[in-house]
Image (cartoon, rainbow, N blue to C red; front, side, top):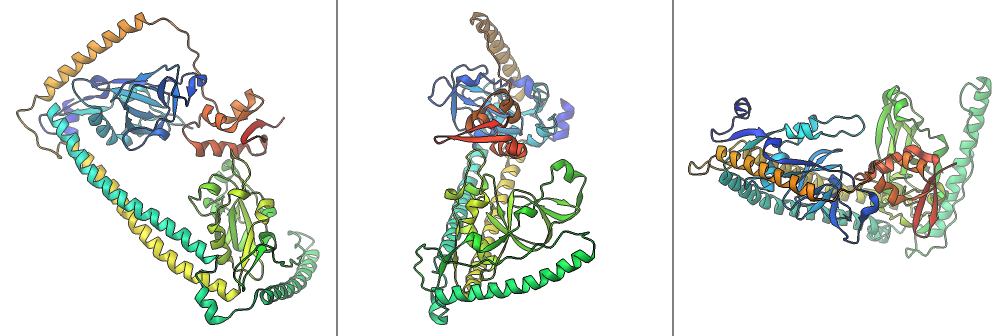
Length: 552
């Protein structure tokens, strides 16, 4: 491996071998799902990257009939979707097919292997094969070049890495805490805004209309708009008839009278209205385009999904300023992205976002901020696939205040949120710098530039000989033990797609379906396949559980 050594420009004392020569790579295998449990029966069971933390994985389940076993201080590496992430095992455990275990010899530690593999993630990913889910074979993993300095130098490298990383982790904790506090502040500001606290002084200074006067003013404004819309509609209808109905027939306008809800509101100048009487809904105009269709319809117009632009297409459905509100997906509960956002200009929307425009009396920016202040749990149906249907959307109460006060609320929120976003950007930049710094430390460590070389250390060649002898002895002992084990037939379970599982049974609990599917390590991919199945899946409630089945 002299050429490899020259390629990596390593110190003279280092050796380059392969991972397979200096360790044992133990590919995982899925045990029967009937042996999975949370009662701590058997061994801790790890299936994939989703259980990984910074160094040690989180134990979520156990397995009473393990097939592939790893020991304490073995390295876990994800070998499929995604390839490359690593963790260390604290205790004897079972691993599924999404992982491989790597056992060290000759005094080499799991930490040394783990940190070196973290410098090789990109290289390992490039070795992956497969179309839907990329994976790396045992052969390709074993062929990975592996750098070996003297054992004492390995210890110095690990110690230096962990000393530097501890300092960086403390800095990261401080930044994450500041980021979390900004999120709390953002939520608190929104709450205050729609309780009237942000504009309390403004109301005292400007003495806006009473709630009764405001309601009358809004309905009068809507009446005028309705009358003008009717005139415009008649003209458009006349033109449509003359043009021999070549375009879509103009929709007849309708009057929406606003009535206050009986909900108690403490501000004398405010009242609560319902969402259905606050907006005009355009859900009927949405059209979903499959990924395959969009591939042949690339263009300049944004194609929106539940939370953001997901593609660009060659045509548009909507032209103007609209409020889009997510209709389904995990974000309705997690709120990792905005629940509602404004889309302007020409664009297309699929069936995963409600499309509305506010009526007279409420500003679109005000409504957007209000919607993003809400916790929607009581309006969400479905557990496997959270959904905000139009019926539940329509019953959400909306606080009304004067147009001037709405404008003032938006002005204050935009000012405060600009400050928050600038601070978040600064924090995120610092967090990115920490990640880059960690990569730089690891790169230097495995170029032989992080710690000094000591001529009195046992040489890497002597270490390599000891590794190979220990490995050979271990394999011989394992063969003896395998012969002593009673032969037992084990039924391997092949993970299937959601559709394949639903076809094979009458109904199944949503959580169990997720865990048995090929998406057991990726809940978002599970939701994505459920979305693609759409109306083919039927959901029934059984107590707190959600049972899913294919429609007959």
